[in-house]
Image (cartoon, rainbow, N blue to C red; front, side):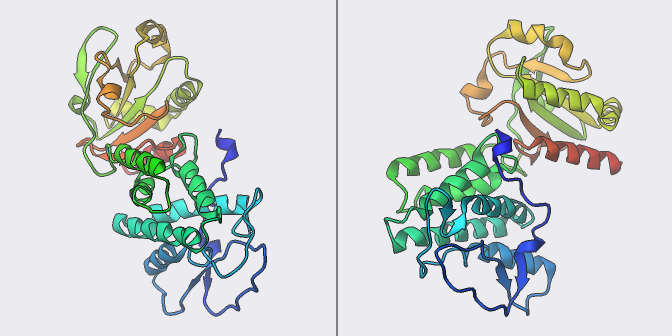
Length: 321
């Protein structure tokens, strides 16, 4: 569950240091190396881009004999490597998409050096597993398919990845390519409790919260309660600025109908009568609940977003009125 993940640091400034500090001697164990930004790089955006491009450079030190075992990866405590991945995610989200992809490609190339240097070293596999888990596990608090996509693209053709795993990454790259941020979300039909058929693109609002939920799902109920309890969200729904489209994609309609008193009547509550969302793979629903934010033209703003991201976006939207 989420408690097993290291939460991304609120600020990444702690891992940025100026150049000129003396190198630490190589030992069997070490701390995660900080990025050394050249003194001539002073623009904040350029610093971010430089850091993104070189975040993993010093970590990939194949000249030392560092420990990789049950507690360490390349001489660094496993928890600290997990924290480094968690801190890497907000850094990538702050970069333009092309720069982010370039940085992730560089990450893949850098960590492959461990395997190239020593095929018996398990560091490469250990780092890949952490990246998999933090970026793609449905319970991860920093999951992000946009960042995971270039990672999958590289791993699918990486010569140091087993051919079966290459196939896995190729498949996941395809799933991550569905409904990417900035693209128009796939349209679909849904049926309400009275049998009226609607379609997603027919819902008119400045912003649409697309909520895939299941009856009896405790996490879904928690999100429903939060949405109902925030007055600003209710006000935006009343004003027509926000539409909540709450869709059930499975078969147990009796359970869904029985849960109807829980769903707010001002939402668009419906089910996928023909079960096309899953069978036609219109959306990659790896877990329920799944939340999307769409703009007025149904372009994807947030995809399978963490709840806090969604609420922050909606509250910021309220303040922008």
